[in-house]
Length: 246
Image (cartoon, rainbow, N blue to C red; front, side):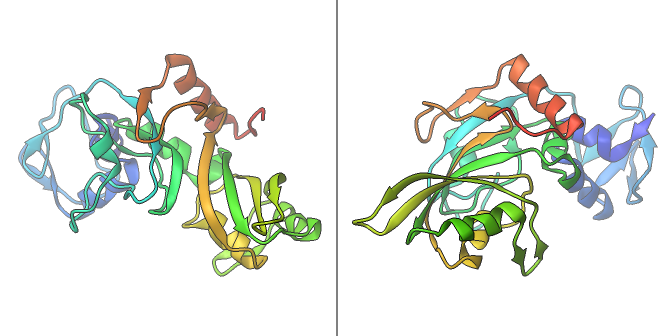
């Protein structure tokens, strides 16, 4: 017997948090009875479990890395009909969804999966899995400004954890700088807000690594499956909470 939200997540319905929302909304039934209480347990081998009337089934676990283009919604669906990340995933019959998100104007490494436990492990704040970005900013930040990001900086939703920050490139003629920044959290538009806090607006933003997984030469708009070793490495990093080797 396992908690219902865990069973749903393992079956690839959604992340555990989203599965909890489905239960609370009364969209889950066990043996014909609606279940709306978190913590309810069931046996996936014996019980008939349905979500919105459709029985769940254990799917093959899929782990995908996409080089997300700018101007695409990080979602499995969009009521407004805008381009979404799953539009770029062809040839996979399983329903996969993003692990965390990249905002509309941000490009780069995005993971998608149907493994709810994996998604929850990588996005839960307590695991601190590092994510590295290349941020092109207006102006050339002084070293003391970058030190503020390294120490942690106050945002409207609280103090950030210390970031790893280095100059990547400086263009004096354009008055721009490319900064490599590694964060260990996943707040909404966090990198952009961190640079706003030191008065250097982000012009372009690209995520180039997630844990020790790197985007490398994967072309924009294309995806590839993760290897078994890559999946295990991400899980181990999340479990240990240790920083990447970069």
